Length: 201
Ligand SMILES: Nc1ncnc2c1ncn2[C@@H]1O[C@H](COP(=O)(O)OP(=O)(O)OP(=O)(O)O)[C@@H](O)[C@H]1O
Ligand SMILES: [Mg+2]
Image (cartoon, rainbow, N blue to C red; front, side, top):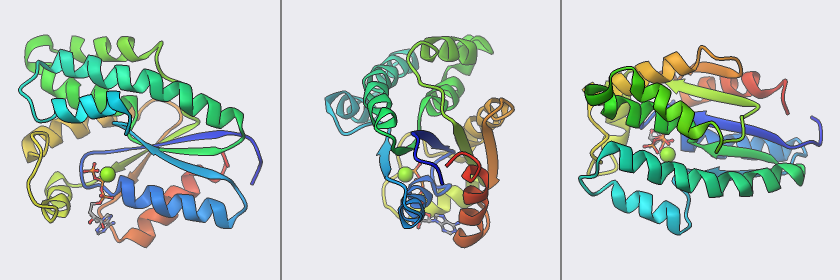
């Protein structure tokens, strides 16, 4: 493993295992002598708190998109500093989440323009990840996994998550995205993710 900053993002619909895999990846990188940091969106600072609050409100999805992106803009500055310091930054959700979730919500009003608006909005805000892992899953399996947590958020519906995952799969046609099927057992998923990032770390 090298010693330079590497930016790894995990994306995917709710319950695909992003947070679980992120923690295991961090441990694996550290066992191999790399300094790894775990970070996530929405963040824990006040902009991230505003985003979480908005999740419980009936907000226009465009307003929501702007809030998520504002949080990301500040977050990206912190990520860039950690990369400069030579760390491996593992980020649980990034701009792909806004494009996929708010893109799905805005499709009704804006059609295909929704995704291009969101990509354009995020373009000057993001730092392009070295690699993005898209964890995919049957939305019903994923929903069952998060269902154990108790009350579901407004985003956690099978039909909506199916649309979200379709947008993610379109984004994943770009270079530096790798799709990993997360329907299987965690050790298998983890192996596939490690394989996908090995060349970068
Ligand atoms: N491959 C797997 N097989 C079975 N259970 C899994 C697998 N991956 C994760 N889980 C379990 O599914 C639940 C959801 O996983 P996790 O919280 O990592 O998902 P997430 O993608 O971070 O979800 P969210 O987007 O809602 O934060 C957890 O209870 C976790 O232990
Ligand atoms: Mg999570």
